[in-house]
Length: 382
Ligand code: GLA
Image (cartoon, rainbow, N blue to C red; front, side):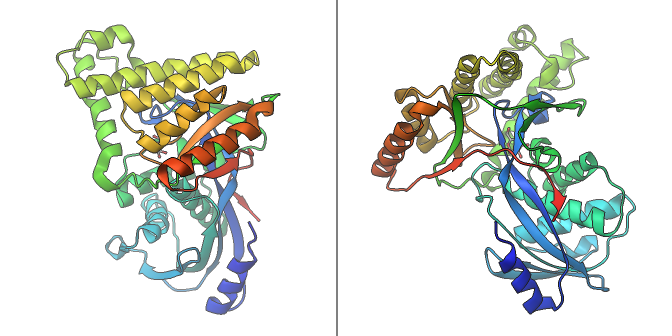
């Protein structure tokens, strides 16, 4: 993205320039809704990011300007100063989480913008949190690690936005590495970089342009609650089970009838998904992308029918992928709208994109957006 317009706005609002930071959005190959269940995820940071120019202003106030929506917001740093605008809460939350860890963050001026599409399942909010987390850590020399910044981003969602999300998005935004996916164990927070170069395939996102808002309706939090209900029941017999990751299908079957049918169905998806990720990783090691693709379709089926976080538009894109012979396809991220991620043989790519985008537009009267996936680095100073 061209950061010149950020610099121009910053200069016009606050005078001389500040420092520029960035943090990206993410994709996830497989492992959805597993993070808050202690399972694995397989994300990668992408070439779409948030950018902020920032400069301490010598006061105890933050003056922020969101260039993409042309809105400004001014707020203090105390708990009682919580702004009402959601975008400002991401910045405020990061400052508060740092203060709660005993660090001193003082007032600053900032202009930010980005090219991570909002509500598309690519983690624009995590990119924003990580961008400011990384910037403040660097500006004020706070000494937080990337993982600590990610955890404060997650805490911001929990405490200042109201989404009880897992760690995947902020983790990926902070730790991304060009050309690599990251296999993260969300229970231990150990991770490894996995080279990603599926020869003969392309990875492409298709955006339904149905925007999700995970906070609205609380559907995301309800999914998490279902998982916790099932864990509580299983733990009566198996006290070692603290998260769904620790459970297996037999343990789950043993509590059928003791938990609600809906909770059971949600947990069935998660237990299956934890295993699917492991199977997909094993297949990737052997360059067996046919198996990876099969697992992606299974994930979609589960997210749609059991976890119920899909929508007609996403299901349509998934059906089109199947019809076009695409190797793997599924809804990506939290769901309820946003993108499908598709693993497609290079020679099928053009026909798939043409046929699918035309059919989608005809059916829903919405022009879908297409993004080729490019795996890039995580948070950085520019
Ligand atoms: C959202 C959340 C993540 C994760 C995904 C689903 O992106 O922020 O923590 O739970 O949904 O995998």
